[in-house]
Length: 319
Image (tube, rainbow, N blue to C red; front, side, top):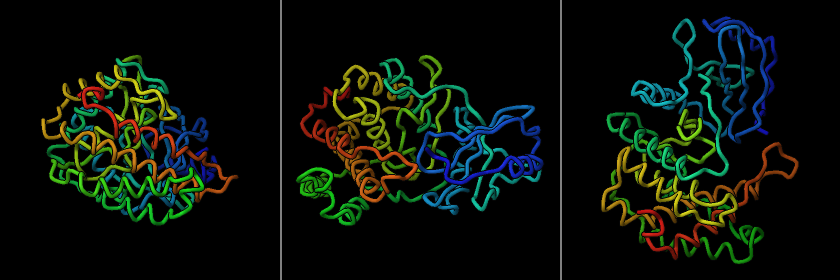
């Protein structure tokens, strides 16, 4: 469940009066997602998403996100722009939260992608990277390689409550990544969270790329590695899908492409992707109350992925 802040029909109707968006017909909370409160809003003229930004999204970052989405939409990518009201304002305040009325994009997110859908996602990621070559915006990655050790230390010995010996495994991996991390690779603004639930599909075509709230400037090929780790396994981290992986990389090569240097560093990038999500899931696992509205995600699903990448031959990864 991801509706933390209630918005009354009266409040929503008053908000819509500032837009050329019709009048309110219906609104309902959207359960998916963990960061913000989201409502599906139908008006007499169209359909929108109302997003209220909760405490995990810094309101100071919102202009960056708005500029990023406007830039990508201007390049023809299927991303959901924030609608401007009649005065040109995109960011509002609703129920005491920063909020945006956002374009609705059709499509569904898939839980078990086919190779054809993996290829389409790779093409879309490559096209996004190509479109961002001339984007000048910048946002620091607060969950980048330089932050993982601090997060691990804050989790501390409690990691072993998730699985015996997990803390030692994490610290050993951090030591390895400190030496192996390819800091010299090209950087750009990246999505940094392109899981299947952040890609909308219509059949085998991508109809939307959503949820840019981890977007930042970092190693560009790491974005590919995050996507690879997210798309190419069963959800529990078991069952690597080589055909899906090969299709995703082939699609990315069509849309933009990995250099020989990026391919050589891909295993380290993928291991870093796994550690990042292992640690953030572990932190949420340890610090989310059992009766909270947010469903905790299993950190060990990314430990299993990490174990796979550690032993995998690059050819297995579709490179």
